[in-house]
Amino acid sequence: PYCRFGGVGTTRAVFLSDRTIMCAVPPVPLGKRVLVEISINGQEYESHKTAPYIFYGMAPALRSATLSSTYQEIKMMFDVNTNRGTLSGDFACSKVLSFAPSDLDLALTSAQRAALGNAPTAEAALQALFGFGAFCRFSNNQTLAIVTGARPTFTTANNVTLAPGKLMRGNELTYFSSGRVIVSPPASAMALQAVLTGPQQIGRCDPLVVDGAGSTGGAG
Image (tube, rainbow, N blue to C red; front, top):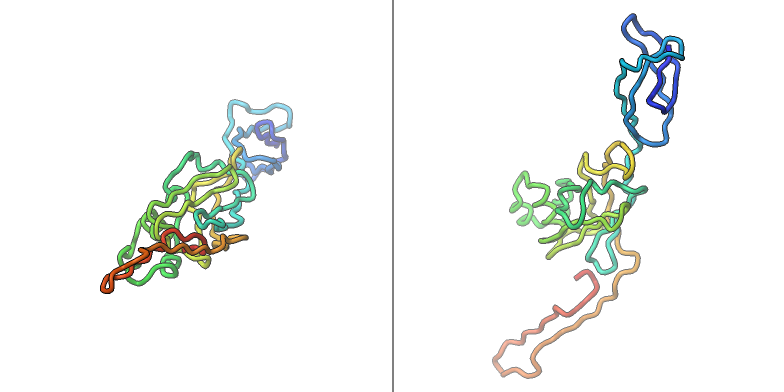
């Protein structure tokens, strides 16, 4: 017997029983859905008795997560283009990311960890790590950016973790991407520039208030 995979290729088959045959699967360059047809002589196929079959391609691999020189983004790079999880614009990071409890334990104080509770939602945990108001967006099909929010707690010892069942290759049926990588420091960090402002004169008993909000760099 023979099997034909929807225009992909024809292979030999063997009978395992009077009701079951086993087909060899041809190699394909891209993941796709096809119909399988059966023939006894390799010439005449039972096209009215087809069955669907899916070739799954390799999942995109998460290669790195690097903190930008301005400390405002974490850029996550994949080895190939993704389908962006069918997302566009800015979106909650919990749509594509997950977290490990160990990352919370590493980044948060005991009080902050207790405030999250024993079973925080993914969004609550990611906001605690990457800052209030943090969100995600795709810079291109191969780069996912985490835009950090206010008072982030993560360090370059923390991991970023992909949520299961979200990202495939951009132009084919593939397995979903998975895994985690450690956040790397920026290749060239922004130099620290301290800017302090305060009153030029104060009274003898007045408190001195100095504001460093204008300072940049140093991840502070």
